[in-house]
Each structure stands twice: as structure tokens, then as C-alpha cells.
Amino acid sequence: MNTEFPASLMEGLPLGEKIANELRIQIIGGKLEKGSVLSENQIAADFGTSRGPVRDALKTLSNEGLIRLERMGVVILGLTPEDMQEIYDVRILIEGFILERLSHDFNESRRNTLLHIIDKMELAAKHNDDVDFSRYDMEFHETMIRYCNHQRIFRLWNGIRPIIFAALLVATKNRFTRAVEGVPQLIHQHRSIVDAISEGDQEHIRQAAKDHYTEAFKTVSQSLFFFER
Image (cartoon, rainbow, N blue to C red):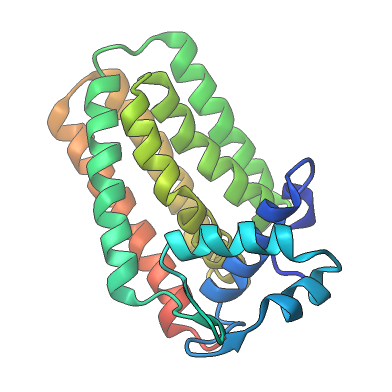
């Protein structure tokens, strides 16, 4: 079958997780439309596997609210603008806390690590590699979260991460195709976040975070809900 989720990001994953990744990005990207119905047998045949890994994947997607499991089959619920707003509300709460906390425990090593990730984003942009750009974008934010060593925050993050990353992949692909001129601004916003944390100025941190997440939400929403697919 033709896949939407990048094969390079699937290596080493359990089969159920691979199926979940593929179905998730097809749902978020609009290939699987809201209201459509699939069967476990159909999905298993598409992926050339037994029903066990399919059931694992469907349980994951059901917990994320992207599908509804019924006796008749799997009903696609999709992702609405309101869903995306709620996800970004949670993301801002999590990362706002993380940025403030990190500013009290920041050092040159951490700064250099984050700047190196941004350099890799910039290199991916020069090569028009939307997949690597998305991967490093996600790595940047997860690195900050890991630095704070807050296990409950990390669990909350892991709960929304799969949808955020799938939406990021779709949005970045669209951005590189339709609005690549906005990529340097996105890179600049990441550097501004690092600078703000380094300075420890809480107002600067809040403003840098607001600028970035406002732009990120706008880009993702346009890609998922307004661009013609």
C-alpha cells in the first residue's frame, strides 16, 4: 500500500505502532475522511498482517479520539479545528511551564545542544527535507522537556505527542511546498526561545513562546483545515 508516514521514521518500531502511525497521519492529513468506516480485516489485509497488531493500533487511535470502535467496524472521527485548539492549549500550558523552569537551570551545554538542533533544522530546510525538518523541530521541544526531568509533565506530553507530530509532518510538508518563505522565520523563533531562556527574562520568555506557538498553531491549522488537499 502507498504510505503517508515517512518510512525512515518507522525503523525499529513494533508493527502495531507502525500501523497506528500510518492510520493517524492518513486521518489527520484527510486521506481517511470523517465518517468513513473500515474493518479490522480490511486494515490487516492492507498492511499484510494479522489482526493482533491492527487491534493494538486501533486501541491507540481510539484513546486519542481519532476513531470510534463499533461492532460494524472502525468509524473515522478525524480531527476538528476545535480538537487542534485544545491540543495546542495543552501544549502551551506544558511548554510554558517547561520554559520558565528551564530558565532557572540552564547552562552552556544545554544551550549549545539546542542550538545544534536548530542548525540541523536549518540544514534540512536548505535541502528542502520536510521530514528531517519536522523530526528536528520535535527533537528541539522534547529536549527541553527532558531537561526539566519532570516525569508527570513528560507523561502528559507523550499523551499528545503522536497527534502533534503527525500534524507537524503534514503542516511542514505543505509549508515546504506552498509557503517555504516562512521557514526562516520559524527557525528564528526557535533561536529566540533559546536566547530568552539564556537571559532568564520571564517576560521575554513568555513573548518568545507566544510568538512561536501562535505561528505554529496558525500554520498547522491552515495545513489541516484550509488548504485544498
